[in-house]
Image (cartoon, rainbow, N blue to C red; front, side, top):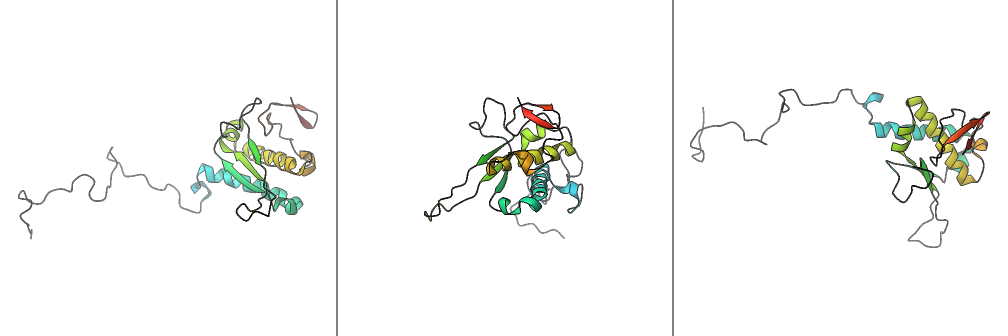
Length: 182
């Protein structure tokens, strides 16, 4: 049984565009859905996977440097700001120095922050394993700079991969077991 209200004299009609659930895309195929279920590692976005690499790098340092790492914050930014670039090229990371002043309640004391730049790091690595080692080396280099020590003290195996770039983006040459910035 059809009931008409008198507002539409033409009778029942198809839903107008924008009304109702859309079941097909413009090519007549089904709409895109999730390809993998949540909980599968592939489900995570590339940005989330990169964040996981940074967390893994920090976790590798924690057994030996837990007390020193407790004040350090880690952040990921897509690309460096325009004012961050220097004559050496595009940096891979930077350090934001904290404020040790605890006397001002409006600006509480903060620890140093290591900011890793995702796109430059991705551009320099050829595969997932190389990216993981590059991220670890950059975290080690920046953490060593915060502590005022050489990266080899933080991680005795620092620079073994020989990726060809320092965290500041300058080319490296391999001599013997270590890397020397040119």
